[in-house]
Length: 101
Image 1 (tube, rainbow, N blue to C red):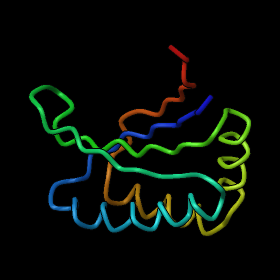
Image 2 (image 1 turned 135 degrees about the vertical axis):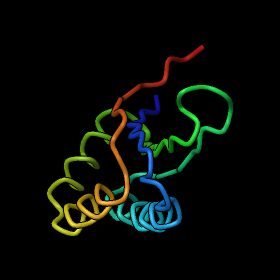
Image 3 (image 1 turned 90 degrees about the horizontal axis):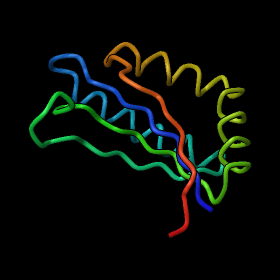
């Protein structure tokens, strides 16, 4: 069953384009460590308008955990994370595993 990790960020005013550029780097970083990466933007009414959800996905929880551990050990990922924090505020971090229906 697939598993995801979701990181939600709100870019600082005027920094959305820079944030998206960094997310393109994050997509390449995730692929380097065996994970897929997609980016979503909340655009409907409510408190999350303008919040981006960065979704890392793997085939199962063990693969997701291994990919994240590998990314966290990568100095290039540390640098990327620091640059992301310069242009956005972390809102939430969560993990979920698919429930078959």
